[in-house]
Structures are given as structure tokens and as C-alpha cells.
Amino acid sequence: MIEIAKPEIILDAHTDMLLDVLALRRRGKSAVLEERFLPQLRAAGVNAAVCSLFILDEYVPEQALRNALDQIAALGEDLAESPSFRLCRSAGECYAAADDGKVALFLSIEGAEPIGRDILLLDIFYSLGVRLLGLAWSRRNYACDGVSFEAAPPYAREGGLTDFGRDLVRRARRMGVVIDVSHLNDAGFYEVSQMLDCPFIASHSDCRALTPSPRNLTDEQLRALASAGGVTGMNAYGPFCETAEHGRTAETLLAHLDHVVRNFGYEHAGIGFDLCDCLESLREHDGTANDLFRDHADAARFVDAVCARYPRGQASAILGGNFMRVFENVMR
Image (cartoon, rainbow, N blue to C red):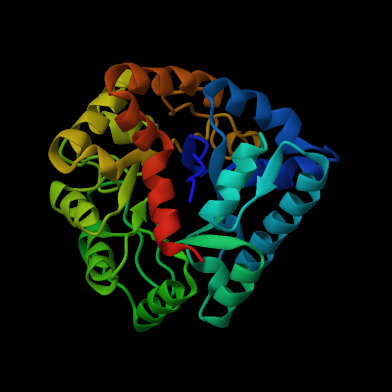
């Protein structure tokens, strides 16, 4: 049998672009993906992205489910007007989309708030295309505790998974939903790592050994993630890359990547830029600029730096192949 070569994937494992898709469509805009995001993604060579269903504090808890469904509905409408994009439910669909010259989009829940305590809602989200589940954002929900941004209480008092959270992890595993531990606190991380018999990911987390934010992963956590066959995506949010504001550069993020590669293997590193400064819907809530890159077009210099820094096969794995390996292993 002749093996057909798979197209190369450059995948950003975490983007909040759906916030803008919903907000701008509510203002009467159309083809938001095509007109607002496609040029920047093309400039960076990104042809796959994980789109999070992130719920702003103002919608939690009562309107979390409604807002998540609104984001999915807005995405569906926008995809009909944005022919360069395709929603994918498996690694195979992603490769097919890339082969057709499309940008492949995956859906992820960022924080289990839309599920509340109704585990059957995970099945509903699955039927709507969700294939990744981030158990927490940086707040408490019915499943678990999120990690604080600062190493101060309530960080020291955070607990692990609840009984519901453990049931949610088991159900997600059976369904073929990838578990994402970014934003999950340390106790929850270790419970997930002990429960799962498959790879899991940290879609957008850097290294705590370099920058002591609780949002980053310790070397012990990175070792557990690697042992499970998982991947962590390099996050371009400045405070996670470097404590000192003047030292936040693309080279700083490369140092985090080098740390993962050197200590745990290039097979366990990826990109999850988490670019928020470019989102109009978030600028309305916080006008500060914290990202290392203005948008994906600006992040192209990081992609180029990875290609220059590592051999071709390793660079290809870091920029997308590693996350795709996990998706092939877990999704179905």
C-alpha cells in the first residue's frame, strides 16, 4: 500500500477568536474569520487552530451555557461566509482541510462552566463539534479549581478535582475528547495525570522553572505530561514568559521552548499563543497590552525563529505535528 504524505500542519493550540466572532457578528459584521483573522493566520503559515469557548466572568454562572452556545452558533454562521475555514472533528479532517488549502478549526471548552453539573451536556457539546476540554479557567467551577495568576491565596488553598470533575474526565476519555490542563491547579493536574491512560495537553502553558507564575508548569509536571505522551503549547502572554516587563521578548519565549526541548524532548513542545491583545472584545474589558506579539502576523517571527533554531523535522513537530499526534491518538 502506498502511504500518502500528510500535509504539514502549523497549529496554534489556543485562540479566543470566537469572542470576536460573536461580538462582531452581533454588531452586524459578516465573514469575521475570513476578513479579520485569515490574513494574519496566513502570514504566520498557521493552517490549524483550536478555538476556545471562553466564558467571561459577567456570564458566570447563570449564562455560561447560553454564551457558549451563542459562540458556537456564531461560528456556524460565520463559517458559511468564510470559505477558507473548516470546522474539524478529528485529525483526519484537519489533514483533509489542509490538503484543500483551508484553515482547520477545532472547538475546545475552556473551563467547564458551560457544563455546570450536568454531565450529559458534554455529549451535547460533542455533537456540536467540541473535541477538547479544558477543565478550568483560573477560577473555581463544579469540576475543579483553576490556578491563580499570582502565587498568593487563594492559590495556597486550592483543591483538586471534585467527584463530578473525575466523572467528567472519565466520560471525556471514553468519548475521545482531549483533556487540557492549562489553567488547572497543581492538585488537579496530578489527579488528571494519574487518571488518564492516554496523552493529555497543556494547550497554553510555559515553564515555571523560568518564570514563577502558578499558571506555568513545573518541571515535575512537564515530566508527567511528557511521560503520558502529551504536549505543552508555548504561551505568548508576557507575564508568563518573563517577570520583568522590559525582558518580555520573542527570545524569552524561545527560552521556554528550549527548556522543554532540552529537558523533556522536542516531541512534547508546541505553540498555544493565546493572543488576546488583538481581540476587540477583550480590549473593551482590559485595554492593557501584554502579549509578545500583536497578532498572528507578528507571531510569524516566532515561527520563523523556530524553523531557524531546530532541524526541519523537529521544527515541524513543534509547530503542529506534536499536537496532531495527540489528536490522532485520542480523538474519534
